[in-house]
Length: 329
Image (tube, rainbow, N blue to C red; front, side, top):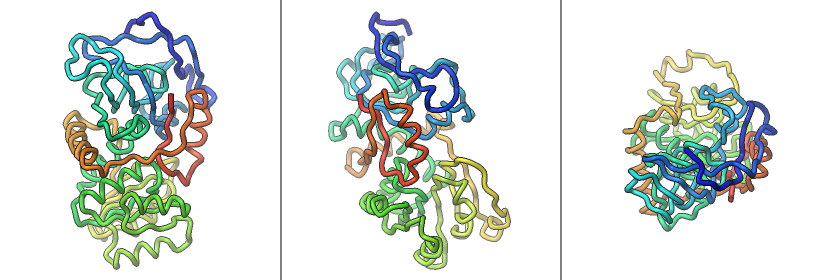
């Protein structure tokens, strides 16, 4: 990854800690692609909660310091390694991972983590595909083994992963329920695939979901804030129901007895545990959504790179998230 003799702006993290450790540098060398790598001019980069956990040093995977955060970017191919045949300079692309980090003007990615960005999607939308849609697909199909006709509850549906989950579940024939914490969020969830929505700030919203499910319960719950909701989720599940843990910000006490009579399951999901076969399957399914038009990322707050610390503050404090937070370069 030798430099091509140019310099770029990039966020660098030299120590794990609070958002202030995100430092914008202007003299970071632009890397050169090795044989199977692609150099991309970054035009937009997704901001994910997992980025904040890694930065704080509390995530299971810790990168070597210093590092640049960011995995899902979109942009234009600047250069390719000599063994790369699927991409050429000028191609519109998005990534599912990066080698040198996405919070930067340029990034390197392995060619097998680069995807063509269809013309009908903007670069901003391209930066909102990878983590949200691949996580939602993995949770619903590869972990929960969801089937058309089942009732799926997206608990925290107005954020990036939640909107993706609603769109995917509706497209694949599920009965889709979603929760959000504001009227704006509830409307967005309805517009993006949910059949029914519930305000999780109302005291009796659990009873309303149970009533909507007709007493049979919910087959699959995609849970974005398990440290708050997991105990209630177990009461909402149907016989054989599954709750998939996508997000968690702390511990919670549950009664395991709540899983026994229904033989229900609690399943964790991590996108980083996906195999190459998992990625291939999800990519094919999601490209189908891009081509047919139901995959339409919802863009939330936009930030310049120099506002990275603020973005990391906001993504954890914005419990009424609406859409995907991105950097625009």
